[in-house]
Image 1 (cartoon, rainbow, N blue to C red):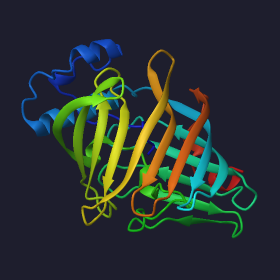
Image 2: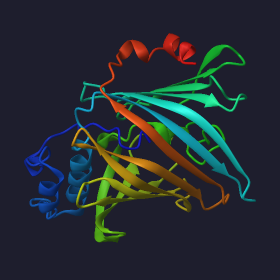
Image 3: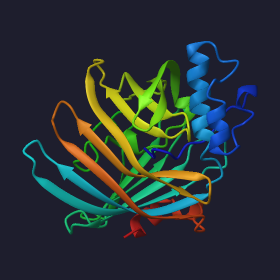
Image 4: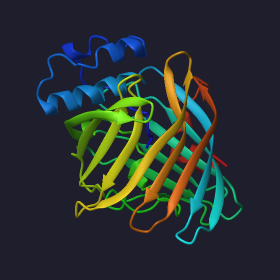
Length: 276
């Protein structure tokens, strides 16, 4: 997902306060001019998206903890790099590089996110010493044995979905907007997702996924948010639970750095091969 790496694609009068501090956003929770559930849902998505504009690029490290149905645990270490795409008609770029354990070290995945066109994704497999393009019709499969699908690691661009505001309700210490999102792009593994977004900072708190048969599939929860550069919020813990397989995956993020000087040259197939 690139879970918070999104970009606004449209601007309306409703979003006049988008770049105000989060308290001002909270004061606008009434979202005037969005009486229709569809318009309200999309406005909430756009406000959420706008809180992340201008981040430039980020680097971070991540621990991936896999737990199977029997409770057996395995761990992996990796790095995650992201480049904001200045083209508002397209999505951000990202790269994940596995460092540990030895059997996956050097494996890397690169994603060019798009809006409605299929995302482009490639994996470098060190055992084969080659880059493999991931088919656009196979992105609902599990990524590296985790409960995250390939499509979950693509930036969640606003234009990828239709929206429907359902209700506001308490969620932990916050109040959250509850939004139904339906993918507009082809080959998604989901018919819909339900997303909980807090009304204070406009950050994701929970997402519930429904499979192609519209049956409950899995739940993602976000925790340990920290703010960077007095603006950008990042969740340092993402926990995905698969209700069908009973498997779980925890992503624990560390050492975020912003505006490190990454460029498009760091997101090519050649750089994917050299990422190790």
